[in-house]
Length: 73
Image (cartoon, rainbow, N blue to C red):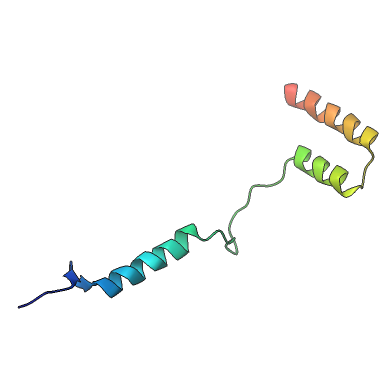
């Protein structure tokens, strides 16, 4: 029997398909539906509200100070 272009029972095309499939599954940075995400911390939410203009700078600094005090306890 002549097994040219066969590697461990599969020819090179099937190896390429498997490599592309594994790359697509593990390397593509899409979010998967139903995947658990880390919840935003209170500080992250505070930063977003300040960046969006929902709170003023003085409110941001006051709440940031309160959060930092709570974290030290």
